[in-house]
Image (cartoon, rainbow, N blue to C red; front, side, top):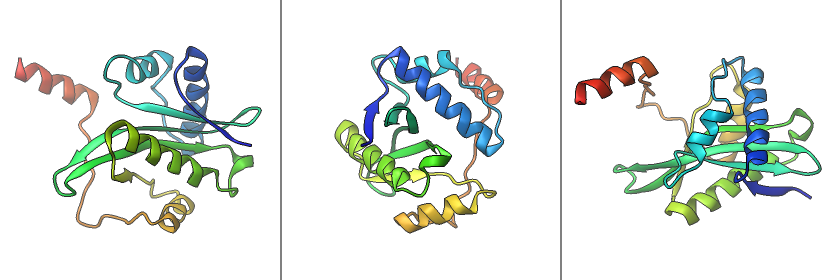
Length: 159
């Protein structure tokens, strides 16, 4: 039986770090968020994100998620930045169960009413998985990112 466990302790942070490093490797991404970054982001009075672990005897899945608000939707939502399931546990409903747990927890924490995530173009199986759950591609939106150096410049301009 799967135990879904919120990331709360140093041990939990270490497990989440392991999962996110594996996800980065699976996707061919660089991995910058080590334990210090996770500790900073997931702890404190107002966490920037929340972590969720799926455990049997070992770690079999994880999710990293955080709040957002949309004036278009008129409600709070949840952004799932990372979702990882071990290769051995794929195809058994664990990804759906993790997203269900995220939705429930976000609903309790900040009354989230909708969910958003991004899917890599080179992972069509992932896109099909999300579409089966009811996720819809947004054709009128281009996701844009302000890199760290530009963010620091922008912060300096405000001071």
